Length: 305
Image (cartoon, rainbow, N blue to C red; front, side, top):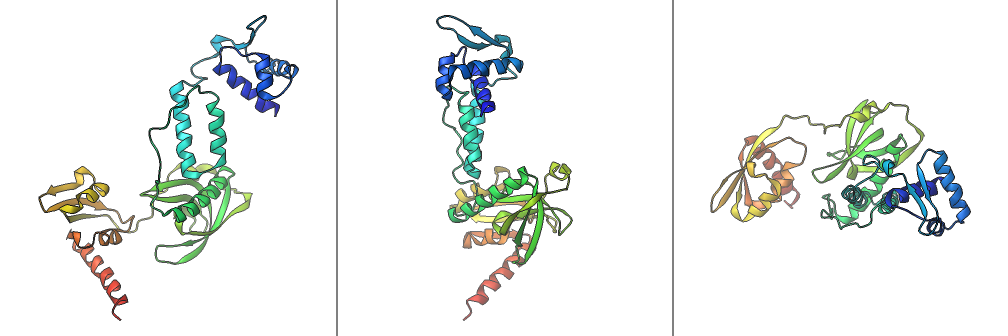
């Protein structure tokens, strides 16, 4: 408790030009004698505190001690608070809120953030709630250098039991993933959080070194990328802008919009194309047309009866 109070006093001294013992005693709900002892402790620790006597007296830091590299400007404080705001929206963790309150003591005025994260992922609110619970669990494991175990369901619906050392949580294409060293594969792997089941944190710390956390793990892709050319009806132009850059939009007429892009097989392109119904046509490659035919035949077979 005393250490936290000393740190808070130091932060107040960095913020204010001068503060009194009466103010500090009331602020921390202690006696003035306790504040006097706290000031002595700070002086012994090497903090250059100047004492002013008489009316309007109090305590202040030696002006030369308030270096720019040691303190934050108002803009920097606001940026820190806004960054914590974004983390809080993503993870909903209590620690972020506590840290915000501490930093807020340093800032006299906080402006509302101009950037808001309303719904950064593609998940429905019900699923997003489960994802955030897993993110909190994995984040705790990363901070404490513990392994996690879970049942993982692959894209093809196959389930395997995994024990991994998580190193990072990343957001890719609207989906949350965890980068980790997988004992089953003996290598770094990426796991989609929505496909993780029965997540558990190990009781003991891992013995694997931190070197595996130094590099970002790429999504495993077994097929080479292909160049795709699609033709959309003009009434889908707004949605086309949602998914394609200006450089990828190659042609635009009164009736059609043609786009060209490179597909890396790291997301499901067939469901994406099917979502446009008869408003899109695959111009190339033929490989993609064949993939679409296979999927359509599967769908048709379900409804034959």
